[in-house]
Structure formats: C-alpha cells, structure tokens
Amino acid sequence: MPEMDVALVSRWICLVAESHGRAVGNLNYLFVDDEEILVANRQYVGHDYYTDIITFDYSRAGRIAGDILISLDTVASNAEKFGVAFFRELLRVIIHGVLHLVGINDKGPGEREIMEAAEDEALSLWDQLTAERDEF
Image 1 (cartoon, one colour):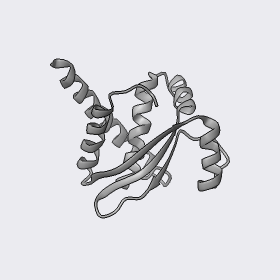
Image 2 (cartoon, rainbow, N blue to C red):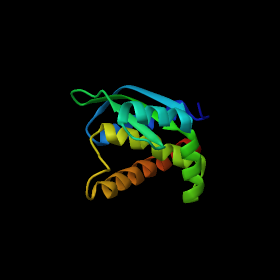
Image 3 (cartoon, helix red, strand yellow):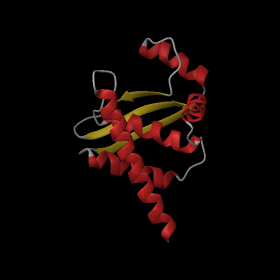
Image 4 (tube, rainbow, N blue to C red):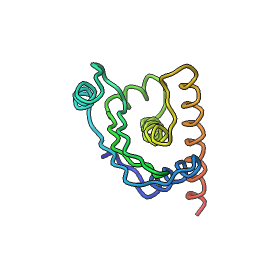
C-alpha cells in the first residue's frame, strides 16, 4: 500500500461522494502491479491490455460500494508521462474509481471531458482539505 494519510483520503472520498448525492459504503482498494491488473483485465473485463484502474461496482440505494484495483506501475508511468507527481496521479486514479461508482462514465461521446472535470473538481477539494490541515 502506498504511504498516505488514510483518514484524510477517506474523508475526501466521502466528501466527493456526498457532492454527488451518495454515501460511502464498503470500498476496497487493491494496489497491484501491471501484471496483476492485466490478469484482472483479461479475466473480468475482457481486455488484453494494461490499465491504471478497474472498478467493480456493488453500489445500492444511494450508497457506493466496490472493489477498486489500481496498478501502481501504470500510475507511475502515467505520472511521468503527464509530468505530475506520483501521489497526485494516484489521487486522481483513486477518485476516478469513486466517480465511476457515483455514475460518471468515460467511454462514450463527451463522457471523458465530464470525468476529467469531475476529477479536477475533486482534486481541488483535496487541495482545500490539505491546506486546511496544514493551517493547524
């Protein structure tokens, strides 16, 4: 598991979910390498390629729940590719899974832009939370 303030990340996830009218139930994050996510992609999604995240949705009645697999290898390579810090890219991927669980998709026409705007909004909230924390 990557080093992080789990309580703060959990609070952030809850706030993002609440901003989309959802409560948070049981979320399981599994941090894996590229080979493990490739196996999961093949077995459960029918894709034969690497991804940074796979989200399994078990949400019900306004409460999000799911298993979220994140490839730390792909997060690292994407961070390098996009010129961002590893932890910032990890946060983006963590919240990407939550945004899928609240109903935001990214595969259809125009959906990618909606997802990216929601990610940016969530990351701005993260910045606010960490700035408030650092004030004390």
